[in-house]
Image (cartoon, rainbow, N blue to C red):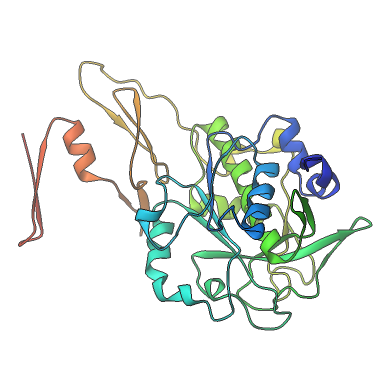
Length: 312
């Protein structure tokens, strides 16, 4: 018999997933991707956990964070549980940084070394590293093998049931955590018209994280375990500004876009940007060619002088 979210009901209820599901928030409109190949047992279990937690999301597998040509565009959440302590994938760190700058939230397993060693990806700030904990008789505690390191960020549950058997390790905890973020982003997209930016999402996570060991941060459990609140009790204005439909003179072309959101409206019609507008050093960076051409201008790029010319 196929395994479903009901088979992990106790843990999903503790994490607040059940409340989100009961209120109809199941990841609609969000794309979540995994690095793993679904043809492998490990990759199949990762995909199974994702589909149990955010069944309405667009779920992608075998997506390469290093090569844009080997992954789909507009991925909101990305998770990987493939690793080694001396991760060969460190060689292309810049690729992951670029992927993160596109607006993708990156999650990885911290490792199962039971010591100070951690996965190679966990060493870099643009990856959110997830350790493993378990629920036993209503008590949450770190599992003995979860790596102890100052690179750990948060904890989530392991030992979840899948169609391929019991999924253990931080390999299970990472997609569990990532899938919960897909629920959050789907919720905010419906409530305020857009997804949270990376910074806003981090604020939301920290606000709803429960200490497991020391208060605040510690090397065994990071900041603790992330627990979803009741959707009805979330003050959406605290984390992200609501996008209100502006009033324009329809005789003139207009463009509406938001920081951290790849969705853009041109004369009221939705389009998707390759890269979301971003805020850096209190300055907004937007795609000049897209804006100019949609407002009726021409754009020329001089590769020798590195100059842009905008004209009618």
